[in-house]
Amino acid sequence: MTISQLAPERALRRLELTVVRRLEGFLHGEHLGLLPGPGTELAEAREYQVGDDVRRMDWAVTARTTVPHVRDLIADRELETWALVDLSGSMDFGTSQLEKRELAVAAVATVGFLTHRLGDRFGGLMLRDSSLRRWPARSGRLALYGLLRALLAEQMGDQEAHRSDLAAALESMARTQRKRGLRVVVSDFLTPQDGEVDSRLEPSWERAMRKLTAQHQVLAVEIVDPRELELPNIGVVTIGDPETGEVREIDTRRRKVREAFGLAALAQRERTRIALRRVGAGHLVLRTDRDWVADTVRFVLAYRRVAPRLHQPPKGVAR
Image 1 (tube, one colour):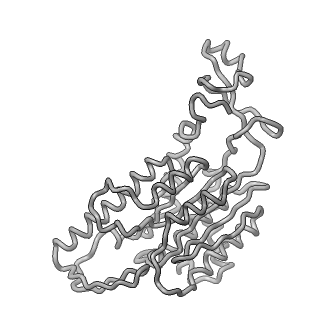
Image 2 (spheres, one colour; image 1 turned 90 degrees about the vertical axis):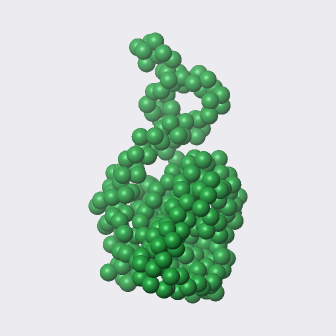
Image 3 (cartoon, helix red, strand yellow; image 1 turned 180 degrees about the vertical axis):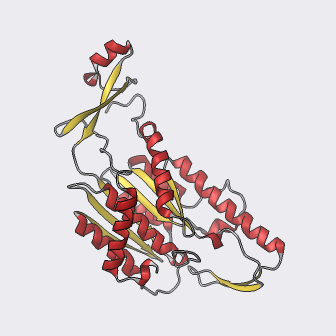
């Protein structure tokens, strides 16, 4: 039974049990202090870099190692997290265990349940065709449940097909949510360029994503269905674009057709991977035919090893 077939409250309870039982402890962690001041405590020592505040020198470690060391600060303040969730027509698709939209809700629930601490605030932006709906950031588990209920309710909408503008939604997120924190972008990242086989092309949303990563820590969750990666040999089929309403007949018996589709799909995924790496966003891929909990665990364990280097302050800039 899929998430959409359950009553909203029952679906959310099942999601929470799945997340907490299997992922508890992986995403917890202190928030890196942005500014020194009241309500902070010392973190681990690290080697001094040009531009570090000399008032935070750790003289004991420096004397022991003969190498200058400073201590980072952990801020005892709330973290504000915003999730931008793509609920456009292309997410109404799934040929395996889950639909892409259901997997998107599960991804938001995972981040929400496991990063929540007392006082933390969680808000959401829902991209549905040509509209962007805002769910205000609030603290507490009930507020998170409210956002997840709203995401589930959006599945029932039936609007006229329009091409969603992910770039504009990212621009709006960067412009309106200025308080530094965690930003989660959940989408399939499909764009009108996806018929191209050149993976070096810059996606239309890359510039807006770069603005977001310049100010916030960003996690991009790419939602993928296996039928978007390759066509099976099932004869002549009618395929429609859920975002534009365009319909085409394709003869999947032809090997060249299947190969062309596979090459374009591979180029689209590579284009997304390269763009997210260029802008410095974390990139988690979840598939509807895989164990999304296990994939999340693997990502978290790998990301935590490199996160301290990714989020150090720029050299020459005092904090």
